[in-house]
Length: 418
Ligand SMILES: *Cc1c(COP(=O)(O)O)cnc(C)c1O
Image 1: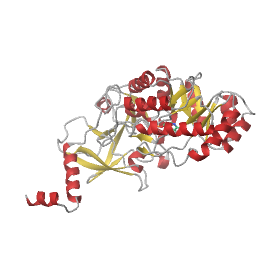
Image 2: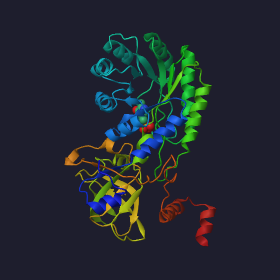
Image 3: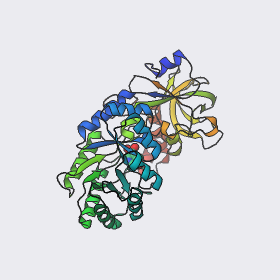
Protein backbone atom coordinates (compact mmCIF):
# COMPACT_ATOMS: atom_id res chain seq x y z
CA UNK A 1 0.00 0.00 0.00
CA UNK A 2 1.18 3.53 -0.76
CA UNK A 3 2.17 5.51 2.33
CA UNK A 4 2.08 9.20 3.13
CA UNK A 5 2.42 10.99 6.45
CA UNK A 6 -0.80 13.00 6.13
CA UNK A 7 -3.63 13.71 3.71
CA UNK A 8 -1.86 16.95 2.71
CA UNK A 9 1.28 15.04 1.71
CA UNK A 10 -0.85 12.86 -0.54
CA UNK A 11 -2.53 15.88 -2.15
CA UNK A 12 0.88 17.51 -2.65
CA UNK A 13 2.26 14.37 -4.27
CA UNK A 14 -0.68 14.00 -6.66
CA UNK A 15 -4.30 15.08 -6.87
CA UNK A 16 -6.33 11.90 -6.39
CA UNK A 17 -9.29 11.78 -8.74
CA UNK A 18 -11.23 9.16 -6.77
CA UNK A 19 -12.09 9.19 -3.06
CA UNK A 20 -9.31 7.80 -0.89
CA UNK A 21 -9.65 5.81 2.33
CA UNK A 22 -6.77 7.07 4.49
CA UNK A 23 -5.99 4.23 6.86
CA UNK A 24 -4.10 4.03 10.14
CA UNK A 25 -3.46 0.39 11.05
CA UNK A 26 -1.69 1.45 14.26
CA UNK A 27 -4.97 2.88 15.54
CA UNK A 28 -6.61 -0.53 15.03
CA UNK A 29 -3.73 -2.18 16.87
CA UNK A 30 -4.04 0.19 19.82
CA UNK A 31 -7.81 -0.33 20.08
CA UNK A 32 -7.45 -4.12 19.77
CA UNK A 33 -4.75 -4.25 22.43
CA UNK A 34 -6.85 -2.07 24.72
CA UNK A 35 -9.83 -4.43 24.49
CA UNK A 36 -7.69 -7.53 24.96
CA UNK A 37 -5.92 -6.04 27.97
CA UNK A 38 -9.07 -4.74 29.65
CA UNK A 39 -11.89 -7.17 28.87
CA UNK A 40 -11.75 -10.30 31.03
CA UNK A 41 -12.95 -12.36 28.12
CA UNK A 42 -12.64 -13.03 24.40
CA UNK A 43 -12.75 -10.31 21.75
CA UNK A 44 -14.54 -11.21 18.50
CA UNK A 45 -14.18 -8.55 15.80
CA UNK A 46 -17.54 -7.86 14.08
CA UNK A 47 -16.32 -7.99 10.49
CA UNK A 48 -19.20 -6.02 8.99
CA UNK A 49 -17.98 -2.74 10.56
CA UNK A 50 -15.02 -2.71 8.17
CA UNK A 51 -14.23 -5.80 6.08
CA UNK A 52 -11.10 -4.34 4.46
CA UNK A 53 -8.26 -6.89 4.28
CA UNK A 54 -5.84 -4.48 6.03
CA UNK A 55 -8.19 -4.45 9.06
CA UNK A 56 -8.28 -8.24 9.36
CA UNK A 57 -4.49 -8.46 8.84
CA UNK A 58 -3.85 -5.82 11.49
CA UNK A 59 -6.23 -7.39 14.02
CA UNK A 60 -4.76 -10.86 13.49
CA UNK A 61 -1.25 -9.48 14.08
CA UNK A 62 -2.53 -7.67 17.17
CA UNK A 63 -3.67 -10.99 18.61
CA UNK A 64 -7.38 -10.93 17.77
CA UNK A 65 -8.07 -14.53 16.76
CA UNK A 66 -11.88 -14.55 16.89
CA UNK A 67 -14.24 -13.02 14.36
CA UNK A 68 -17.99 -12.44 14.26
CA UNK A 69 -19.19 -13.11 10.71
CA UNK A 70 -22.61 -12.94 9.10
CA UNK A 71 -22.23 -14.51 5.66
CA UNK A 72 -20.14 -16.95 3.63
CA UNK A 73 -18.27 -14.12 1.85
CA UNK A 74 -17.26 -12.71 5.27
CA UNK A 75 -16.15 -16.21 6.32
CA UNK A 76 -14.09 -16.59 3.13
CA UNK A 77 -12.57 -13.16 3.61
CA UNK A 78 -11.33 -13.91 7.13
CA UNK A 79 -10.24 -17.46 6.25
CA UNK A 80 -8.15 -16.14 3.32
CA UNK A 81 -6.18 -13.86 5.63
CA UNK A 82 -6.29 -15.76 8.89
CA UNK A 83 -6.87 -19.46 8.16
CA UNK A 84 -6.63 -20.35 11.86
CA UNK A 85 -9.17 -17.81 13.03
CA UNK A 86 -12.09 -18.88 15.22
CA UNK A 87 -15.28 -17.82 13.46
CA UNK A 88 -18.69 -17.30 15.01
CA UNK A 89 -21.64 -17.14 12.62
CA UNK A 90 -23.69 -14.66 14.63
CA UNK A 91 -26.42 -13.80 12.14
CA UNK A 92 -29.63 -15.18 13.68
CA UNK A 93 -31.12 -15.99 10.23
CA UNK A 94 -28.94 -18.03 7.85
CA UNK A 95 -29.61 -20.07 4.74
CA UNK A 96 -29.28 -23.85 5.09
CA UNK A 97 -26.61 -23.82 2.39
CA UNK A 98 -24.63 -21.19 4.31
CA UNK A 99 -24.91 -23.16 7.57
CA UNK A 100 -23.67 -26.37 5.88
CA UNK A 101 -20.81 -24.61 4.11
CA UNK A 102 -19.79 -22.84 7.31
CA UNK A 103 -19.79 -26.09 9.30
CA UNK A 104 -18.39 -28.56 6.76
CA UNK A 105 -16.13 -26.38 4.58
CA UNK A 106 -14.94 -23.68 6.96
CA UNK A 107 -14.90 -25.37 10.36
CA UNK A 108 -17.35 -22.95 11.96
CA UNK A 109 -18.79 -24.36 15.18
CA UNK A 110 -20.51 -21.32 16.73
CA UNK A 111 -23.93 -20.29 15.49
CA UNK A 112 -26.46 -17.73 16.75
CA UNK A 113 -30.22 -18.25 16.67
CA UNK A 114 -33.32 -16.56 18.03
CA UNK A 115 -36.07 -19.03 17.07
CA UNK A 116 -36.83 -22.75 17.38
CA UNK A 117 -37.06 -22.85 13.58
CA UNK A 118 -33.49 -21.61 13.18
CA UNK A 119 -32.30 -24.12 15.77
CA UNK A 120 -33.88 -26.90 13.71
CA UNK A 121 -32.26 -25.51 10.54
CA UNK A 122 -28.82 -25.47 12.18
CA UNK A 123 -29.17 -29.05 13.47
CA UNK A 124 -30.52 -30.25 10.15
CA UNK A 125 -27.92 -28.52 7.96
CA UNK A 126 -25.04 -29.82 10.09
CA UNK A 127 -26.32 -33.42 10.05
CA UNK A 128 -27.30 -33.31 13.71
CA UNK A 129 -23.80 -32.29 14.82
CA UNK A 130 -23.20 -32.56 18.55
CA UNK A 131 -20.23 -30.20 18.71
CA UNK A 132 -22.12 -26.97 18.01
CA UNK A 133 -21.77 -23.89 20.17
CA UNK A 134 -25.33 -22.56 20.13
CA UNK A 135 -25.79 -18.93 21.12
CA UNK A 136 -29.32 -17.69 21.78
CA UNK A 137 -29.72 -14.06 20.75
CA UNK A 138 -31.87 -12.27 23.34
CA UNK A 139 -34.01 -9.23 22.66
CA UNK A 140 -32.96 -6.47 25.05
CA UNK A 141 -33.97 -2.85 25.43
CA UNK A 142 -31.75 -0.53 23.40
CA UNK A 143 -32.10 2.76 25.25
CA UNK A 144 -29.10 4.99 24.91
CA UNK A 145 -27.92 3.71 21.53
CA UNK A 146 -27.71 5.84 18.40
CA UNK A 147 -28.70 2.80 16.35
CA UNK A 148 -31.17 0.29 17.67
CA UNK A 149 -30.42 -3.29 16.71
CA UNK A 150 -33.26 -4.78 18.73
CA UNK A 151 -36.14 -4.35 16.28
CA UNK A 152 -35.12 -7.16 13.97
CA UNK A 153 -33.42 -9.83 16.05
CA UNK A 154 -33.54 -11.26 19.53
CA UNK A 155 -36.11 -13.48 21.24
CA UNK A 156 -38.45 -11.65 23.64
CA UNK A 157 -37.79 -12.35 27.33
CA UNK A 158 -41.02 -14.30 27.91
CA UNK A 159 -40.28 -16.74 25.06
CA UNK A 160 -36.58 -17.12 25.81
CA UNK A 161 -36.63 -19.88 28.49
CA UNK A 162 -38.08 -22.56 26.16
CA UNK A 163 -35.51 -21.76 23.46
CA UNK A 164 -32.66 -21.72 26.00
CA UNK A 165 -33.72 -25.20 27.21
CA UNK A 166 -33.98 -26.49 23.63
CA UNK A 167 -30.53 -25.15 22.74
CA UNK A 168 -29.08 -26.62 25.94
CA UNK A 169 -30.47 -30.06 25.07
CA UNK A 170 -29.33 -29.86 21.45
CA UNK A 171 -25.61 -29.64 22.13
CA UNK A 172 -22.97 -31.25 24.27
CA UNK A 173 -20.62 -28.33 23.50
CA UNK A 174 -21.32 -24.73 24.55
CA UNK A 175 -24.72 -23.08 24.97
CA UNK A 176 -24.73 -19.34 25.41
CA UNK A 177 -26.68 -16.12 25.33
CA UNK A 178 -25.94 -13.00 23.33
CA UNK A 179 -27.50 -9.62 22.71
CA UNK A 180 -26.74 -6.30 21.04
CA UNK A 181 -27.48 -3.16 23.02
CA UNK A 182 -27.50 -1.09 19.78
CA UNK A 183 -24.64 0.53 17.94
CA UNK A 184 -22.89 3.65 19.27
CA UNK A 185 -24.34 2.92 22.73
CA UNK A 186 -23.93 6.03 24.87
CA UNK A 187 -24.87 4.38 28.19
CA UNK A 188 -22.39 1.93 29.73
CA UNK A 189 -25.06 0.58 32.09
CA UNK A 190 -27.10 -0.66 29.09
CA UNK A 191 -24.75 -3.67 29.03
CA UNK A 192 -25.30 -4.42 32.71
CA UNK A 193 -29.09 -4.11 32.30
CA UNK A 194 -29.07 -6.45 29.29
CA UNK A 195 -27.00 -8.98 31.22
CA UNK A 196 -29.53 -8.87 34.07
CA UNK A 197 -32.30 -9.63 31.55
CA UNK A 198 -30.31 -12.60 30.25
CA UNK A 199 -29.69 -13.83 33.77
CA UNK A 200 -33.43 -13.76 34.63
CA UNK A 201 -34.27 -15.74 31.47
CA UNK A 202 -31.59 -18.34 32.28
CA UNK A 203 -32.89 -18.71 35.84
CA UNK A 204 -36.45 -19.15 34.57
CA UNK A 205 -35.23 -21.71 32.02
CA UNK A 206 -33.35 -23.56 34.77
CA UNK A 207 -30.18 -23.83 32.65
CA UNK A 208 -26.68 -22.48 32.93
CA UNK A 209 -24.97 -20.64 30.07
CA UNK A 210 -21.43 -21.57 29.07
CA UNK A 211 -21.03 -18.32 27.16
CA UNK A 212 -22.24 -14.78 27.83
CA UNK A 213 -21.68 -12.74 24.67
CA UNK A 214 -22.31 -9.03 25.22
CA UNK A 215 -22.20 -8.22 21.49
CA UNK A 216 -21.06 -4.89 20.11
CA UNK A 217 -22.23 -1.32 20.57
CA UNK A 218 -19.04 0.17 22.02
CA UNK A 219 -18.98 3.81 20.92
CA UNK A 220 -16.62 6.11 19.11
CA UNK A 221 -16.40 9.90 19.03
CA UNK A 222 -18.36 12.08 16.61
CA UNK A 223 -19.15 15.82 16.83
CA UNK A 224 -21.74 16.37 19.53
CA UNK A 225 -21.45 12.74 20.76
CA UNK A 226 -19.06 12.41 23.66
CA UNK A 227 -19.25 8.91 25.11
CA UNK A 228 -18.10 7.89 28.57
CA UNK A 229 -14.62 6.45 28.90
CA UNK A 230 -14.34 2.96 27.40
CA UNK A 231 -13.28 1.62 30.80
CA UNK A 232 -16.76 2.49 32.12
CA UNK A 233 -18.27 0.14 29.53
CA UNK A 234 -15.88 -2.64 30.50
CA UNK A 235 -16.56 -2.04 34.21
CA UNK A 236 -20.33 -2.22 33.60
CA UNK A 237 -19.86 -5.52 31.74
CA UNK A 238 -17.70 -6.98 34.50
CA UNK A 239 -20.25 -5.90 37.13
CA UNK A 240 -23.05 -7.37 35.02
CA UNK A 241 -21.14 -10.64 34.64
CA UNK A 242 -20.46 -10.86 38.37
CA UNK A 243 -24.19 -10.44 39.05
CA UNK A 244 -25.25 -13.17 36.61
CA UNK A 245 -26.17 -16.73 37.56
CA UNK A 246 -23.33 -18.46 35.75
CA UNK A 247 -20.88 -21.20 36.62
CA UNK A 248 -17.16 -20.83 37.20
CA UNK A 249 -16.11 -21.74 33.70
CA UNK A 250 -18.65 -19.56 31.87
CA UNK A 251 -16.88 -17.56 29.17
CA UNK A 252 -17.37 -13.84 28.57
CA UNK A 253 -17.31 -12.77 24.92
CA UNK A 254 -17.68 -9.37 23.24
CA UNK A 255 -18.06 -8.46 19.56
CA UNK A 256 -16.85 -4.89 19.09
CA UNK A 257 -17.05 -3.59 15.54
CA UNK A 258 -17.16 0.18 15.47
CA UNK A 259 -14.85 0.73 18.46
CA UNK A 260 -11.97 -1.20 16.91
CA UNK A 261 -11.97 0.62 13.57
CA UNK A 262 -13.82 3.97 13.70
CA UNK A 263 -10.78 6.13 14.45
CA UNK A 264 -8.50 4.27 12.12
CA UNK A 265 -9.72 5.67 8.84
CA UNK A 266 -10.80 8.90 7.25
CA UNK A 267 -11.95 9.57 3.71
CA UNK A 268 -10.34 12.13 1.45
CA UNK A 269 -12.70 13.53 -1.16
CA UNK A 270 -12.67 16.30 -3.70
CA UNK A 271 -14.91 19.32 -4.22
CA UNK A 272 -16.23 19.23 -7.80
CA UNK A 273 -18.42 22.31 -7.48
CA UNK A 274 -19.55 24.88 -4.95
CA UNK A 275 -23.07 26.38 -5.03
CA UNK A 276 -23.36 28.77 -2.08
CA UNK A 277 -23.10 26.67 1.06
CA UNK A 278 -23.48 23.40 -0.89
CA UNK A 279 -20.34 21.47 -1.82
CA UNK A 280 -20.68 18.83 -4.54
CA UNK A 281 -18.17 16.08 -3.71
CA UNK A 282 -16.88 13.01 -5.50
CA UNK A 283 -18.14 10.97 -2.50
CA UNK A 284 -21.59 10.57 -0.98
CA UNK A 285 -24.30 8.45 0.58
CA UNK A 286 -23.95 5.60 -1.91
CA UNK A 287 -20.24 5.60 -1.11
CA UNK A 288 -18.81 5.81 2.38
CA UNK A 289 -21.09 8.58 3.69
CA UNK A 290 -24.16 6.46 4.44
CA UNK A 291 -24.39 7.58 8.07
CA UNK A 292 -23.85 11.24 7.18
CA UNK A 293 -27.01 10.96 5.05
CA UNK A 294 -29.32 8.53 6.76
CA UNK A 295 -28.45 9.38 10.35
CA UNK A 296 -27.38 12.95 9.56
CA UNK A 297 -24.13 12.48 11.49
CA UNK A 298 -21.97 15.62 11.17
CA UNK A 299 -18.63 13.85 10.80
CA UNK A 300 -15.56 16.01 11.57
CA UNK A 301 -13.96 17.58 8.49
CA UNK A 302 -10.73 19.30 7.59
CA UNK A 303 -9.83 21.31 4.48
CA UNK A 304 -6.76 19.81 2.81
CA UNK A 305 -5.27 22.56 0.62
CA UNK A 306 -1.67 23.23 -0.27
CA UNK A 307 -1.80 26.95 0.58
CA UNK A 308 -3.57 29.55 2.68
CA UNK A 309 -7.25 29.26 3.58
CA UNK A 310 -9.68 31.77 5.07
CA UNK A 311 -9.62 31.88 8.87
CA UNK A 312 -13.38 32.31 9.04
CA UNK A 313 -15.36 29.05 9.22
CA UNK A 314 -18.75 28.50 7.61
CA UNK A 315 -21.30 25.69 7.80
CA UNK A 316 -21.63 23.67 4.60
CA UNK A 317 -23.88 20.94 3.22
CA UNK A 318 -22.49 18.18 1.04
CA UNK A 319 -23.93 16.58 -2.09
CA UNK A 320 -22.63 13.25 -3.39
CA UNK A 321 -21.76 12.40 -7.00
CA UNK A 322 -24.79 10.27 -7.97
CA UNK A 323 -27.90 11.62 -9.68
CA UNK A 324 -30.18 10.61 -6.80
CA UNK A 325 -31.41 13.55 -4.75
CA UNK A 326 -31.20 11.47 -1.55
CA UNK A 327 -27.43 11.70 -2.06
CA UNK A 328 -26.97 14.66 0.27
CA UNK A 329 -25.49 15.20 3.72
CA UNK A 330 -26.92 18.08 5.76
CA UNK A 331 -23.99 18.38 8.20
CA UNK A 332 -23.40 21.15 9.12
CA UNK A 333 -19.77 20.63 8.15
CA UNK A 334 -17.62 23.55 9.33
CA UNK A 335 -14.93 24.56 6.84
CA UNK A 336 -13.10 27.74 5.82
CA UNK A 337 -15.29 30.35 4.12
CA UNK A 338 -13.34 30.15 0.85
CA UNK A 339 -13.72 26.45 -0.02
CA UNK A 340 -13.68 26.14 -3.81
CA UNK A 341 -13.71 23.64 -6.65
CA UNK A 342 -10.62 21.43 -6.65
CA UNK A 343 -10.17 21.56 -2.87
CA UNK A 344 -9.84 18.34 -0.90
CA UNK A 345 -11.71 17.56 2.30
CA UNK A 346 -10.71 14.94 4.84
CA UNK A 347 -13.69 13.45 6.64
CA UNK A 348 -12.60 11.87 9.92
CA UNK A 349 -13.82 9.01 12.10
CA UNK A 350 -14.97 7.04 9.05
CA UNK A 351 -13.37 3.67 9.80
CA UNK A 352 -16.60 2.00 10.89
CA UNK A 353 -19.51 1.59 8.49
CA UNK A 354 -17.73 3.81 5.94
CA UNK A 355 -15.97 1.79 3.24
CA UNK A 356 -18.20 -1.10 4.34
CA UNK A 357 -21.29 0.69 3.02
CA UNK A 358 -19.98 1.66 -0.42
CA UNK A 359 -22.02 0.70 -3.50
CA UNK A 360 -21.32 0.88 -7.25
CA UNK A 361 -24.42 2.98 -7.95
CA UNK A 362 -24.11 5.30 -10.94
CA UNK A 363 -20.59 4.05 -11.65
CA UNK A 364 -19.09 5.51 -8.49
CA UNK A 365 -17.82 3.62 -5.44
CA UNK A 366 -14.19 2.99 -6.38
CA UNK A 367 -12.13 3.91 -3.33
CA UNK A 368 -8.37 3.84 -3.15
CA UNK A 369 -6.64 2.89 0.09
CA UNK A 370 -3.59 4.86 1.24
CA UNK A 371 -1.67 4.43 4.50
CA UNK A 372 -1.12 7.51 6.66
CA UNK A 373 0.56 7.75 10.05
CA UNK A 374 -0.80 10.96 11.55
CA UNK A 375 -3.20 10.84 14.52
CA UNK A 376 -6.94 10.26 14.12
CA UNK A 377 -9.19 13.32 14.64
CA UNK A 378 -10.30 11.95 18.01
CA UNK A 379 -9.58 8.86 20.07
CA UNK A 380 -11.12 6.70 22.77
CA UNK A 381 -7.66 5.15 23.32
CA UNK A 382 -5.37 8.11 23.96
CA UNK A 383 -4.12 8.69 20.39
CA UNK A 384 -5.85 12.08 20.05
CA UNK A 385 -8.26 14.32 21.99
CA UNK A 386 -11.26 12.59 23.57
CA UNK A 387 -13.77 14.96 21.95
CA UNK A 388 -14.36 16.80 18.72
CA UNK A 389 -15.14 20.37 19.74
CA UNK A 390 -17.61 22.24 17.59
CA UNK A 391 -16.04 25.47 16.30
CA UNK A 392 -16.71 28.46 18.57
CA UNK A 393 -18.85 29.97 15.89
CA UNK A 394 -20.90 26.74 15.79
CA UNK A 395 -21.47 26.96 19.51
CA UNK A 396 -22.66 30.54 19.10
CA UNK A 397 -25.06 29.45 16.36
CA UNK A 398 -26.31 26.70 18.62
CA UNK A 399 -26.93 29.16 21.45
CA UNK A 400 -28.77 31.46 19.04
CA UNK A 401 -31.04 28.59 18.01
CA UNK A 402 -31.71 27.72 21.61
CA UNK A 403 -32.45 31.34 22.47
CA UNK A 404 -34.85 31.86 19.57
CA UNK A 405 -36.69 28.64 20.21
CA UNK A 406 -37.01 29.21 23.96
CA UNK A 407 -40.70 29.27 24.91
CA UNK A 408 -41.88 32.63 26.25
CA UNK A 409 -40.72 32.75 29.83
CA UNK A 410 -39.42 35.31 32.30
CA UNK A 411 -35.76 34.64 31.70
CA UNK A 412 -36.16 35.04 27.94
CA UNK A 413 -38.04 38.34 28.32
CA UNK A 414 -35.51 39.75 30.71
CA UNK A 415 -32.71 38.93 28.32
CA UNK A 416 -34.45 40.62 25.37
CA UNK A 417 -35.16 43.80 27.31
CA UNK A 418 -31.56 44.21 28.40
C1 LIG B 1 -23.11 -5.17 14.01
C2 LIG B 1 -22.88 -6.21 15.05
C3 LIG B 1 -21.81 -6.06 15.95
C4 LIG B 1 -20.92 -4.86 15.99
O1 LIG B 1 -21.61 -3.74 16.44
P1 LIG B 1 -20.83 -2.35 16.73
O2 LIG B 1 -21.93 -1.44 17.14
O3 LIG B 1 -20.18 -1.96 15.47
O4 LIG B 1 -19.86 -2.62 17.82
C5 LIG B 1 -21.61 -7.08 16.87
N1 LIG B 1 -22.40 -8.17 16.90
C6 LIG B 1 -23.44 -8.34 16.04
C7 LIG B 1 -24.25 -9.59 16.13
C8 LIG B 1 -23.71 -7.37 15.09
O5 LIG B 1 -24.74 -7.53 14.25
